[in-house]
Image (cartoon, rainbow, N blue to C red; front, side):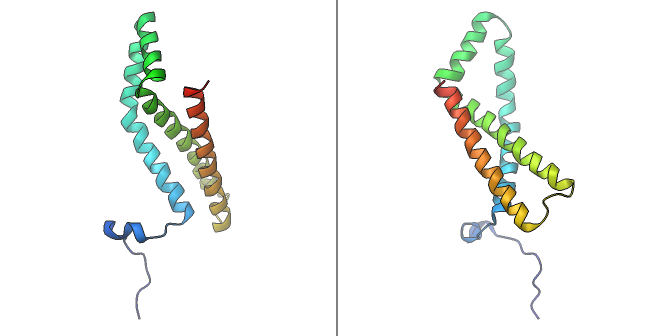
Amino acid sequence: MKHQGPRNIGLGSIKSYSFPITAISSIIHRITGVLMVVLLPFLIWGFSLSMRCGGDFYYVQDLLIHSPWSIVAWIFISAVSYHVIAGIRHLIMDLGFGEEMCVARASSIAVLVLGVLVTIFWGLWLWVM
């Protein structure tokens, strides 16, 4: 009899593997956590520079609005937003609510949709408003 236990997915076959929506939501949650850690030094640098004097504040403001650094800022605030939304979902599940597969699937979809909407909002806020 063949054992039907957990199996590892090789990196070569990862493209052909069909991940469930709950796994996609969880993987993106982990990726946003890594992005936050990687981009945090840039945020601290910008904050430190902006606190020196008024001229430096306007320099950082100009960087965040009219340069490629605005994309870094957009990625950072979008990652934080998604990470918080998914984190709240995980905390609710840790309390014992929504652990059934149908509810977990629905909450994963809700987190992904909210994440996309928040990302669009931050882009509009940075570049349009």
